[in-house]
Amino acid sequence: MIEQRMNRPVTVTENNGPFKPVRMLDVELSEPLPVIPNLDPVSHQSYGQAWILVRLHTKPVGLVMVSLAAGDLQPEDYVGVIWGQLQKEINEHLLQDGLPSATALEEAALAVSSVPACLHDREEFLERAPFASVIICTRDRPDQLAVALSSVSQMQYPRFEILVIDNASKTGSTRQLIDSRFGHTNNLRYFREDRPGVSWARNCGLRHAKGEFVAFTDDDVIVDKYWLADLMKGFEVASDVACVTGLTLPAEIETQAQMWFEEMGGFTFGFDKVIHNIVTAPLPHRLYPFSAIKFGAGVNIAFRASLLRAVNGFDPAFPNGQDIEAYYRVMKSGHTLVYEPSALVRHFHRRDYAALQRQLHNYGIAFTAFLTKCLVSDPAGAISLIRKLPYGLYATLSPKAPRFSKKRPDFPEELTRLERKGLATGPFMYFRNRRRARQVARRFGLPEPCCSEDGLHSPPAFS
Image (tube, rainbow, N blue to C red; front, side, top):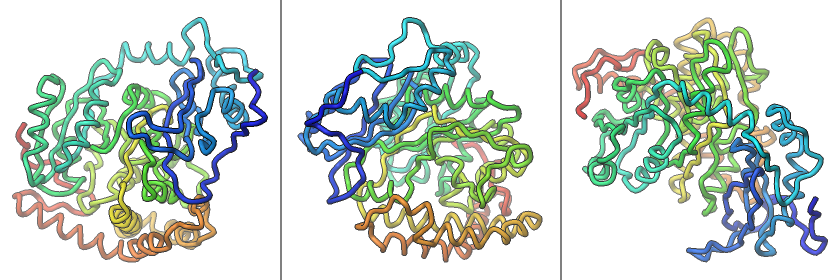
């Protein structure tokens, strides 16, 4: 075992003091551990800390935060921190792979001479993997979309298609990008959806998808090369799985706004697999099943296509939060949902403060709009929701609630107020947006959507 240097103590970062950018990186424990530099070799940006995604046999094990204030970190400087925090998780993974447990983590790492069971299982799955559709909705963000498409097109998955949905864009930049840089990508199809809103765009993708399963991500992400494989494999962990979500980590923490988003909870929901069914395996959360926001981030989800169509896809009355509302309807229909942390996506949080303000305000609107729809469309569930509301108000509004535990003293109170303002206006916005969805449907000559109908039968978009 390589012991930590006595003159170079490495401590877990506590996010104290003025903001400094964070270096995001992966460490694979089955390979020699790398040096973690303090300076970016291209931008020469200095980092105050590193967030290390620890992986074993490519599978995420946990996230460790260490200080870079003293400069570069050699493997012997941080190996003890990883072992101290993740010893239990590392040995659990080794046990699942049928390998002997470790008593220490060394600089040479946990190399094995044969293929680990988890990787063998993945390769076996890929030989019979179902055809899947990956749907990416975008609007006038070609530079971001190019990064996302590059990562999706390089995934390790044998049979899939990519559907780019250009949603009410004001320019032809998205189509130009597809033609100029991805015209050679045989499994990519482009569609335009003129009705503005993510729900309309996702339903357009669902309408045209050929896959048995549909996976949704956004144009501001980088997907792991095994993302789709592990997402699809999640449909096999239990009977009647209708939806699988995955682990979403920040792609970067370069600005204060991005750090504040993480302090508000971010998109990370842990490293433990979760299987839940409202009838046979409900979650022990006091707001369940109305805590649908805890089921996974909307940038990292997949559905069995037939079941998502059966519940009418995404409700256009939700410009934001349509994912949690869809989770809830799938769950209420009696199907199983799975959170699979091996299915990894990295998300580029909003870099500037104004965008973060809008985002948190919209998140507040989305949550109470979702609760409003639960009240008006599900009378049987309304009684349960009313009983849970007191705790819901505490968990949402109280500064002592667990969701606020990451906030540093310098966290802007304005952001909290904006989210609360959104929470207060969510019910009004739900009815307004439902009315607008009907108006849009009439303008396009479609049947008017009700609270659970969203225009899946609209005319096909061009490709």
